[in-house]
Length: 218
Image (tube, rainbow, N blue to C red; front, side):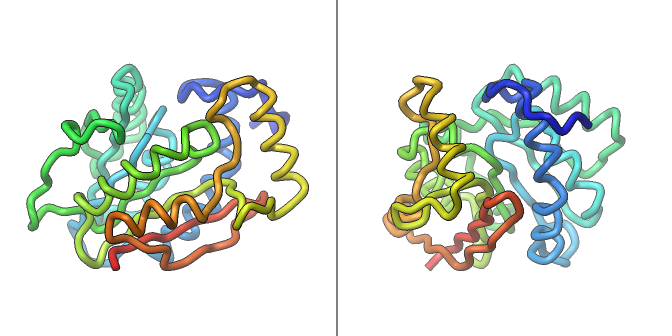
């Protein structure tokens, strides 16, 4: 894979997103191997699946689990399904429309079919922080009582950048002229979580100055 960063483009099927996904998938897989349940037939949901590259990379490592891709943008569904078919991943369901700003799309899983884990990768640097409210409310609705939400990405910590490179990345995002682009603060995610009966259980330092944030029900 070409290691040179392509031009910044948040579209889920862009070269930039593919490049970023290729860099972060192994460290995230390491966290999932440590955190995902061992019980067979548990269900794992991905929010904002985009191209489907992450869920299709992770699923073969957990053949005992059922994976469920979702996205607000239905135009990516064919790409997700094509990847799943090409890679022969039999434990990935067809993608489902889920818009974190529209509770009408938050399907009711039923108590016996709730999700053990929800994960979301690299969304907040290009999404408004207000989406955290919908994410936490939706997670509280879909998760089992002992389940968790894993959010991966670069963040500020209590208003501060953890490294100079994160500050540079934030400045690059901000220079694009899109108001919501930029690193969000973990404190804002914690605030949104608290409003919906969730709390930050664990903050894991990741390579390239990213974090894996583990939220669960209070």
